[in-house]
Structures are given as C-alpha cells and as structure tokens.
Image (tube, rainbow over all chains, first blue to last red; front, side):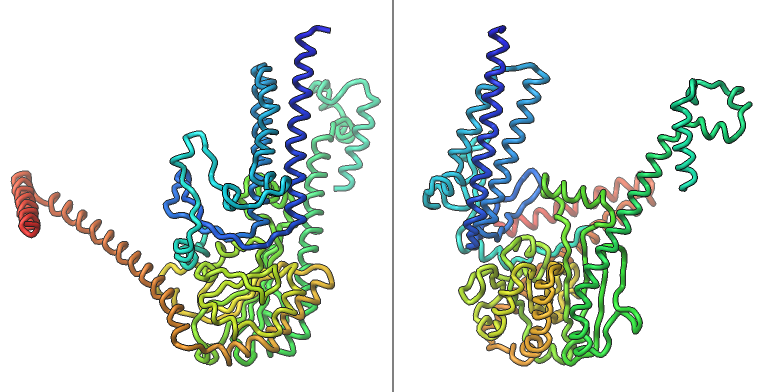
Length: 169
Length: 371
C-alpha cells in the first residue's frame, strides 16, 4: 500500500474517533446534568453585545440546570462548526495536516471545559468554576472582554427595570 | 381529479410499451392523432407529483387543524361545568363557545360573576395545520434559538371589575415556573418589574416573582401548594397584577387595570386536564375572592410598589418630552428655510448676518456666566 495514503487513512480514522469521543463526553455530561436536575436559581447580568447594537446589559434569571444545558449546547455547536471547517479544509482545499491537530484539541478542550470538570470529575463549583463562568480569553484578548456582573446591587436594579413585554411587530 | 390520475396511469403504461415517447413526435404527427390518443401518450409524471403534493398538503392541513380543535375543545369541555356554574354568560356569543381566528389562534370569553368583569382565554397553538412552518420553526429554534419554539399555550385573564378593584392595592405578585423563566420575564412586562426569589414554602419547580416579599404571607394561600404540586408539569405562572403584559408606550397605558393572569401549556393527558380543572376550581372558588377581600397592605409595603410605577411613568414622560423637543426643532428649521426662500439675495445676506450676531451675543453671555 502507498504509505502516504495509509497515513491519511490513519489520520482520518483518528479524527473521526476523536470527534465522536468529544461528542460522547458532552452527551455523558448532559445526561448527568439532567439527572441532577439542579433547580437552584441563578441571576446575573449579561454584558451588552456591541455587535447587536445593545447598550444596556441584560438580566438573566435562570436555573443552574438550564444554564448548564445552554452552555453545553454551545459547546456541541462549537464541535459541529469545527467539523464543518475541517470538511472544507480537507475535502475542498485538500489540506491533511490540520486533521491531526484538530483531532486532539477539541477533546482536550472538552475535558478542560467547566461543565465536564464539575459534573464528570466532581469538582466543586467554586472559584474559577463558579457560575456564571467567566468569558474565556477570546480572539481579541480576554483581558478587555466584558464580564458578567453578579453583584447584588446592580441585579436588584435591573430586576425591576421593566424591560419585558416589548411588542415586536 | 381521479379520472385524470387514472388516465395518467394508463398513459404511462402505454408509453412504456410504445416505441416513441411524446416528445419524439413532431407537431403534425400529434395533430393527426385523436384527443384520446394524445392524452394516452402524454407523460403525466409532473402533474401527478404536483397533484399528489397538493393533496398531501390539504390532508395534513385538515388533520393538523382537527387536532388543534380537539386540544382546545378537550380543555374547555373539561372545565365547562365549572365555568357555567360560576359565570352567567359562557361563550363568545349566546350560541358560540369559541371564536376561532385561524387554526392556531382561538379565544374564549365568559362574563357575569361577582368581582370579575370578564374571563378571556387566548389559545395559541403549534402551527400543526401548516407542516412547513411547523417544521421550519422547530429547526430554527434548535439551531439558532432566535425563533421561539412552537408551543401550545393558553392565557387565562380574569379581569377584576372596577368595584372590586377599589378593595385592594396595586401590586404585582406571581408564582412562576422555573422552567424557561427568563423567557417569561421577557414576554410579560409585569414580571419584568418584579424581583425573583426562591422560597422553601413553594415546590422546588416554582419561584416567587413579587414586588414586596412580605406580601407572600397573605397572598400565598394555604391551598396553593397542593394545586401547584399537581400542575407543575404544565403551569407557567399565576400572577396577580395591575400592570399589563405589554410594555406601555404612552402615559395612558400606565393606568392600573387589575387582573389575575394564568398561563398554562395546554394540558393533554387526562391527569393533566384534571389538574388544570382543579387549578381553575381553586382560583374561582377560593383565590380570586380571597385576593379581593384580603389584599390590602400597610402603607410601608405599598410604597415600594408606588415607587416602581412612578419611575416607569417618569421614564415615559421623559420619552414624550424628548419627542416633543425633536418635533419643535424640526419645525423651527423648516420655518427658517421658508423665511429664507421668500427673500432676495441681499435680504438673505442681511438675515444671515443678524443670526450670526445673535449667536455670538449668546455665546458671550454664556462665557460671562462661567466667569
């Protein structure tokens, strides 16, 4: 067999297994979250997203379970986006090298993610793992990124600000 | 439609045996044939697909809209005895119980009871009659989260009459299901004026959303928990409010109008329907009259409610003033333009000079004040 081809097949197999493993880890975490059914209320202020032209921060009132499930969904979405990118790079642009790199890194970030740390490894949800999770260092440097507010004063002010029921037409 | 389809079937069979297909014949050849021969020869595939498609669509429309009808009637019939016992007029007219706007919107009305001006129930169901929209909404909700997921919801509004409204205070007090509560706060203006607090007096699936926590002692009726426990799978919220669910846009919208609002996912199973009936029984037999007679509080408690309302009114006033100012400025600009256009060049220059001088003087005045 041509050695170049067999290498490619190996890499592809590795990529597929790793992606499936990542999804498996997330699904397992999901089942734990649903089983725990933690209905403790959680309130925080989401910083305004400047991309959507918002100027005021939004109050989010949710439960720990709903929050975790939402975070998990965005993580799973991230995996799918990665697969789509990979498919484009590999099938259309014929790059093979990123396959190796991209098979390890989602799995690594899955195990490092806050949710897996809390639910699978049973770490207490305090310190860095306290909900709401801090916005990670993004593409544009995490230092300047706006963080969620959880102080009592601003939450109490936002709670009675009457922002609901705006007619959408 | 049926003979056409049969003909088409026959046509395709014949075409399968024949030597030439329809498109291979020339026009004169076709013109020589009889009508029947031509119809037999013509390939009816496209027509069959489109007719089949339309038939499937019509069929799903009827099935879906029948199912929606059934859901609404099922819920209503289970509570009809109770409603007839409580209200003198039940139904939108004497002869009609429900008003059906379309296959996903229904409304019900009842009136004629002590303390209650009217009961309106607004049903909003999943668009089962339109499979495409239904499917699209499901997909969009799953992948983007921008479209609200389709749901079967009923809003029951017990409007308190003006006489009974005088008997108790203006406040907002609600028991809300924790499931998706952020969305409920977003959809209902009155909930977004309240503070959310957990309490061990409630089942874990619910929270209090109220303006003044001290009101719980009176408003959290002792029979509430039993009912909540039974309704936890479908009850979204029970609220006593004087504000509307839509954010007021003008000052006149802020005048309090007292009501008790209940939102449910439309109950389906018999156990759920029974539980919903029990909830309504509790509201009509005990709770509404209880609120009307008992919900007057000390001045310290109602002061906080008043403060929130005043803040909202002042926000609206400011908005209205800003709008007026803007209109005035626009009018002034237009007047100036008109004045200018009426003059000749020399006079225009003079006017400009005058305006400039006035501006300068005004600035001088400002500087003097600063010193």
